[in-house]
Structures are given as C-alpha cells and as structure tokens.
Image (cartoon, rainbow, N blue to C red):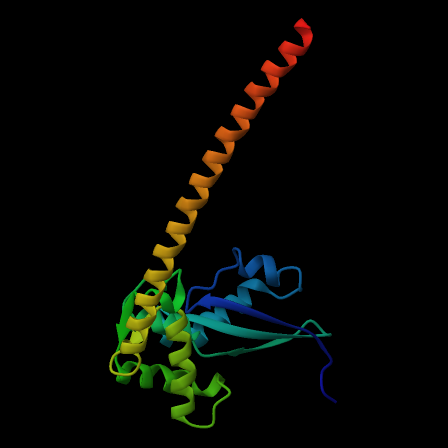
Length: 196
C-alpha cells in the first residue's frame, strides 16, 4: 500500500549549502523532518551543482518519512549566470542590461528541458527567451533589434511622462496662487462689511 502524503513543500536552496538555519529550518522544522539528516542528503545529492540555486520538492508522508526530488536550476538564475549579471532589469524588456548568445540560450534550454512544458529544444528555447526578455537580457542575433526599438519607445514614453508631470506641477502652482489671491480679496470684502 502506498504511503499517505501529508503535504508537499517546495524550497530553493544553494547547491551543497543546506543548513538547519533559516529558511530550511523554519520551513521543515514544524513539518517534523529531521533537519540534519535532510541537509546531509540534500548536500550530497546537489554537490555536483555547486554555485547554482537548486529547487527541491519535498514530499512529507503521514508516518513522518519524506522523499525529495531535485529540480533544475530556475531559468532566471541560469540566465544571470550566463549573462554574468547580478540581477535583471527593473524595467523588464524596456531596459536591456545584458546579452547572451544563441548558444547560451540553447545550453540553458537543454538544462531546463526536463522541467519545462515543452516537447523539443526549440520550444524550450522560446520559453527561456521570453524569460530573458522579461529580465532585460537580449539574445544576440535573435531579438536585439526588437529590444533596441522597445528601449527607444520606452525612452520616448519616459520623456513624455516627465513633460506631463512638469505641466501638472505648473498647473498646480498657478491654481495655488489663484486660491491665495481669492483669500486676500475675501478678507478685504469682510473688512469692508465690518466697517459698514
């Protein structure tokens, strides 16, 4: 008879560096998992992927036993590694922060293929390319022209937005001056009424 599953827990831990400290301890401790044992097993299983972040899916059973499955490194982490950047663009595709080659794209897609909803390497490459685009990472020869055009459009939009904000500030300042003038006129009218 199959074991009854209590719950599934997903974590992302640096390969070979799991410790009972947070975040591992805070998530797995309340679940009743032996932290030292889990960390030892995880570190042994992931030591060949040192330097990468490794997603792990832990299945906790009713009898307090568990299994875990290592997944492939998240696509954004692989893209950052190949592009040699610390983080992607805050503005997404509108701000290109790095480029990767088509060969890099294929290598990332080959690593990610087992975990992607794709039937072949070409489909996996399109999925990874979309992730790269959202991070502001261009693929040389594939979408750099399109990204350059998007960057120009974004710059124009930012300039127009700044102009609109300046006009709005000017309108608010003139409206404030008009309000102050109206208050002065009202005060003079009240003084004249009091004198009569």
